[in-house]
Amino acid sequence: MILKPKYLISDIEYFFSEDQGRYLIEVTKKDLKKVTNLLDKNAAHYDELGVINADQLYINEKSKITIDELKSSNTSWLNNYMDN
Image (cartoon, rainbow, N blue to C red; front, side, top):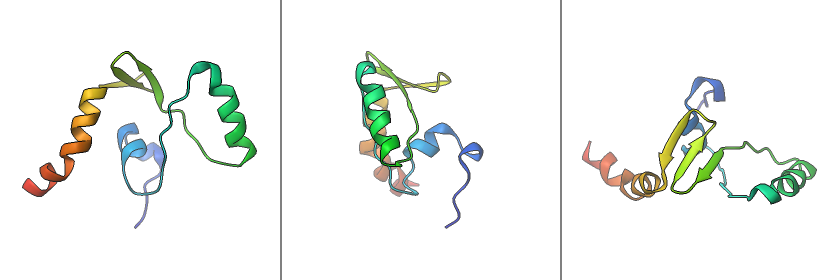
């Protein structure tokens, strides 16, 4: 499989697709520097995805999605895929 460079796909596809292993972690603002230092020290690639405010995820200040939409998408994608 040939992977598209990050700049050729949408942020949603890049962060949430299953073409390679990724972990999503939530970090408070006060702990962000500590976590990024640890990742840098261990040569771990990371991207800052966005900010969660109340019930929405803001991705790179361009896109937003509600937590409920993320949950629904996660639990229904296989049924939707199989129906098509």
